[in-house]
Image (cartoon, rainbow, N blue to C red; front, top):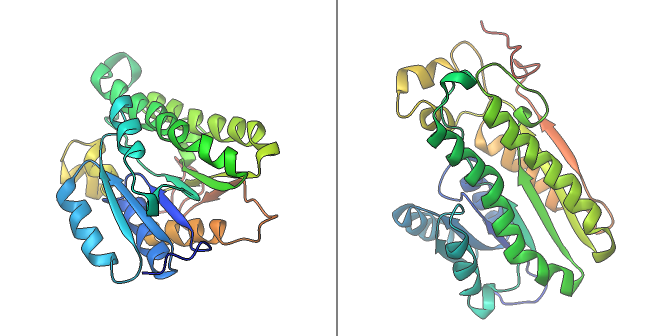
Length: 255
C-alpha cells in the first residue's frame, strides 16, 4: 500500500464488532490506513484479512480498561502506523439494566472503566503527538443515554454523560492546537450491545428491536466518515443520530 504522507492513519478502539467494525470497513474503502484495536485477537486477525486488500492495517490486542496495556500497545506501533491522524473511541458497553438499589457493582465498574476511563487512557496516549503536530481528529462514540436519563440505566447514562462532558472539555482544551474533537450519540443500533447488556440472554436482547427498524452499525459509520471528511476548517462537534421510530431513549413507535 501507498506510504504517501497525505494518507491519513486512524486508530479505532472496539474495532472487532458493531460501530467500530463498520467504521473500519468504511475507512478502508476510502483508503485510510488503520490501527484496529480490540480484546479478541481472532476477530482482529479476521478483520485485518478482510481489509488488507484496501489499505494498510495493523492490529493491537488490549483492553482499554487496563491503563498499562493501553500505553504499552500504542507505544509499540511501528513507524508506518505511529502518527495517528484520526482517533475513534468506539470501545465501551452497557452491563445490566436494574434499579440502582439492585445494581451489580461489577457491572458499574465495567461501564465506568470501559466507557470513561478507557476512553481517557487511549486519548491521553495519542493526544500529545496530535498537539505536537498541530493536527488531528478525535471522535468519541457516545449515546443518546449521554443526553438524557432513563429508568434502571442510571450508571450507564452517567458514563455516557461523562463522554459528552469529556468531548466538550477536550474541544476547549485543544482549540489552540488545531485538533478537532467531536462526538456522535446514536440511539437504538442493532449490534451486540443488547446481548452484552443482558449477559447473553438472546430472547431479551432480540425483544429490544422488535416492531421497529433500528439503526445499523453501518448507518452510524456513514456519519462518522462524513465527520472526518469535512474540510480542514470544519469541525462537527456533536451529532445525535436516531432511527425514525425513536424520538428519545424511552419514546419509540413499534408496529
